[in-house]
Image (tube, rainbow, N blue to C red; front, side, top):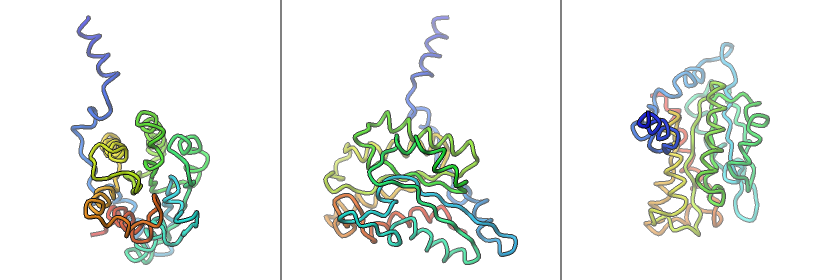
Length: 239
């Protein structure tokens, strides 16, 4: 009986990272297979595909000095790239991101302000602002959003963070790296998509040219947004 109690207690407190360690990410060719089929259907049999971008100031389009460069930021760069791949598709890009918000606040309004758009694909990007929140609270908020979306049959893609130039990305234990690893673990645990631009930005930091991709201390410019967009579009590849 004592041994059984120990097993049950272990399962309760077992870290999410341990539960996910034997899983691998979904196959990028298969995960959005049904969505990609829909994107190839021509009128009059096609329908609108809703792609929702939920997060903080980066997907909201904030650049330097609080300017909002909507059409040069990654949600609309993704739209541009998808239209090149799927010329017959009706794609509705919906941005529910709010500048300065963290995942906890994003989770609080998730049902009323995100799921109400009935997304076919949902992208979540909060890690940059989750550092003050802490890993545990951030994980809880991300899991809440992921689970709610999956319960509605939504395909989910998680994003690792874009840079903050006040953080030395060359250090493997920096806070952005810690949140990145947690996001990767959540993608494996819930078997959802992962768009992972963080290693590319880390390589730029190591090469000393990260500033070329930034409009502001923690907001990418168009070149930086292109990096993020490309990691997302990989999930929509139709070959």
